[in-house]
Image (cartoon, rainbow, N blue to C red; front, side):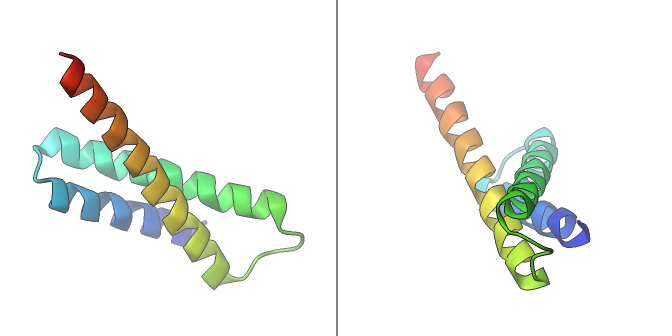
Length: 83
């Protein structure tokens, strides 16, 4: 759980730095990264019997955070083009 939070915040921070947005976008990216990371960690525990290794948990958290942030960017880009 601890690594899920750390990886999620790190992925959100990296996304905020690369997108060059305002502070509200920065905090939004941190939040979405954290949510994706926790989701990836929970899904891993749901499909892997027993307690998964720390490395596997970190990888699942990172993948979940990256997927969540990618979905957010796609949705935001679509809405921007629509307006």
